[in-house]
Image 1: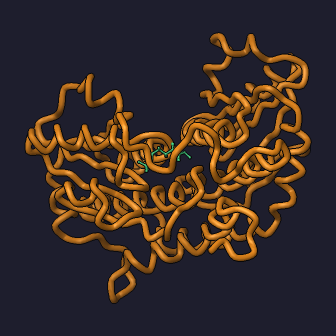
Image 2 (image 1 turned 60 degrees about the horizontal axis):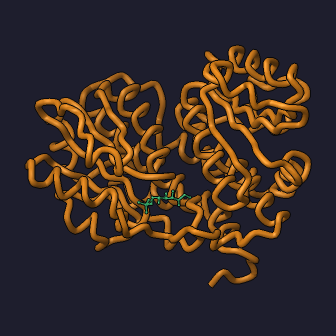
Length: 357
Ligand code: F6R
């Protein structure tokens, strides 16, 4: 059912504005307030620390979620890669609360952690796109992503859904804690949906970016600071898995501690600038790489753009920028994969759900 679309991935990218709207509908009460089921809210409220466990793109969504819980609700959060956590468990707090994030709900690496945590008797919430999936059945609580089936191996709309749902959970918990929130998340998510739509309506711009920066390159770098660092990890993962271009995401400030040695004439560097308080630092990092010959693609948010930036994103609330900045990264990867003749929806060596540890 990809209809007129050449690939599921493109269809799923296009569905993202609708996914954000659908999540808002599914997480609002009759008065139109954002809510989560009270048993989940209560269990979360009792916790002294959250442990987010996930793999791949879902792990990247978890990193963004950490910022939400810490900045909105004031709860400390650790985010762990499931394959590491199972065998190298950190010391847990007194009242831990576990959140497993998994599009498929079947990832074996995450499941083995869930089984161990269950044995320890700690509360577990699974955030998944698949009702009745293993991780959902085995958890105490489930929150659904409502993204609709994701068929392409590269995860797109599930990431957006995960970030949106985590924002809602953090916001609801912040309200329960009586935190002063200076924004209306529901209204802001409406703006996000509209702005994702604007980006997908101009997707040919991203096709040009892919052609200009990635047609023949062997490698590529993504840099960002703060929340944009997490997006740089996701941008790199998306690009490498479907275009086979070796790609790495870095914290802007870390690049000079080694990796900058790899910058040569023409090396593509995608720089994300959506956070005002670090935008000048990141501009400095861009200068460091362009001085050494890099071909910098600057993706900035309206309000902090400078002449010459490659992509200027329509503005959203500073905490919600991942929901829009990920979209050009997805589209650039899509078009790079296409231009290089790769199998966009079914990249080599990869499966949609990874059921081995
Ligand atoms: C990346 C991708 C993988 C998955 C990872 C976790 O595009 O699809 O990195 O994100 O295998 O899968 P789930 O979320 O199903 O647990």
